[in-house]
Length: 441
Image 1 (tube, helix red, strand yellow):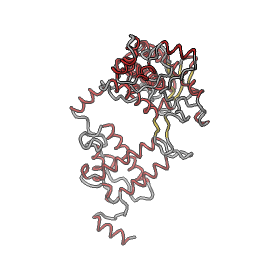
Image 2 (cartoon, one colour; image 1 turned 120 degrees about the horizontal axis):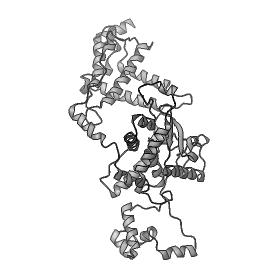
Image 3 (cartoon, helix red, strand yellow; image 1 turned 90 degrees about the horizontal axis):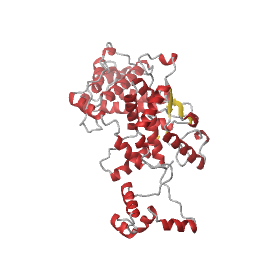
Image 4 (cartoon, helix red, strand yellow; image 1 turned 120 degrees about the vertical axis):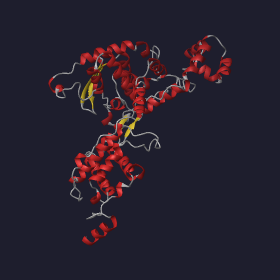
């Protein structure tokens, strides 16, 4: 072993080479993360998946000479001195041009901060790992770990981008107008309760107090209690979801209390055994966005999380920061972090703000028509063309002329806008074929 180490020292140019590189140490740290964040039932926690993704990105940047001037992962641990550690932190402290943007945009301060924190977690583990001969070098903890501030152009772009966090009323109205029942309830929960996809996926039947128009539950990410007063439309939508669940085949017993499931009985949003997330909520949401964009190509590709930000911003305008924090179920609602241990949260204050927001959005919430929870006839024409078809039909334009003008079949005209005569024939004769639903509950 002594002879081997001497040869390594001579070849690597460092004293007392260990024969173990930073890359090998990070691979061992990855195994440690997997072990420590795997639950007894074998499920890898989603937070662990996030840490591993961050670690993969860290390794990519540290191994690329374009960012730090050398491949830091090839260093022997004995060469991991103060200067080398400082340079590794410096890669992210300087907020490098990102690989994702093909070296066009600088890394965001929040991303750089997360990478710096995870790099620190690696060094903390490495210092305490008995299997490796490495300890913190002198002055290690004096290394600067704060990323560079935003430049003036970046601050301007960030300021302008904040204006896009809130959906304007005309865009909300379009979404409600185009939404199918399974999409409409997500819209309502996002606005009424500031739910993100994980809150929708974690919603349990036991949290629903529909006789009181209240959701009384937990935000599992922060372990905080949450309460929301439900708009009448939200309450109706949840009752529709529960009715649809009763009409479908039963899924697994462990999912019986989950509110939102697929047609196969699996949770619409859930963490997989490998720590990834199966996000059916975003899939349903993207389906709605695409339908709107078919008739309105300029409509932005909002993410579902924009509803949560819109809700919090509107509540902030109506009430105050404390109330906005409550609807988001953040960890604290004030500067005193121990306050929630001694005082009950003023839920009525939040309920009053939610009622006020419902009043402000009243016309938008009714944009789907008088009976928004009935199945719709399947159509791939787009809502604008369907409206035009029905308008021409009501004006008495013959079906053949409508079909020619809109470039559809005559059968499509009769299916989407049946005449009064055809309805009577259907009621007197055989039972007509029910419309096919385009909903996925």
